[in-house]
Length: 132
Image (tube, rainbow, N blue to C red):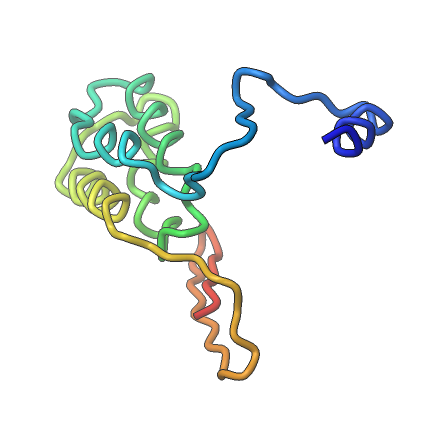
């Protein structure tokens, strides 16, 4: 621990003590139960502030949600000035993101003895890739 703190100090890096845990026997690396509950119970956003809150929560997990940029596109379009109109397309995106957050995703170290498959997704507003 001293070495870690020394390296942090040497490089002018700081940690938030409230967010640190030491001597834990278990850690959550991905979506915790409280985040899933918060997402599944999230009401339909009525304004930009509520939409930004929802997108902020889901955006944190964008790397493990397949096609995140494509799914969230209708919602991110509502962030532009004077275009907050909740339509069928935005409701579908909202529901799909809520569902994606509840899926049990597993991240693991790669097995170099097996073949790697790269899935990509690209369109006019974003690019994404997943190593399978």
